[in-house]
Image (cartoon, rainbow, N blue to C red):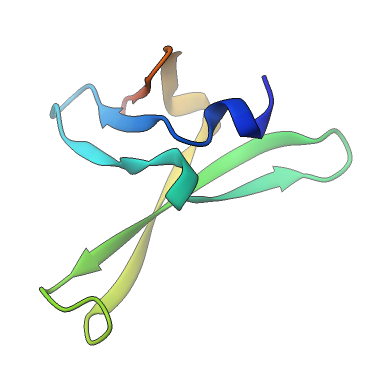
Length: 77
């Protein structure tokens, strides 16, 4: 599957039912030797104003992805 096909899918945590964001808004870490994704980096915003707030990143290992559907990605963390 190509990144372009994954780009606009919602990320849902199956443990909590929480929507974590869109895959297109995330960064990824990948192995340059084989081109496989290792980690998805999901930005977390703390506070109401994003330009003032402290930005943290939630790192989700690729192994935590349980299912990739037509419109969402199910993870377990």
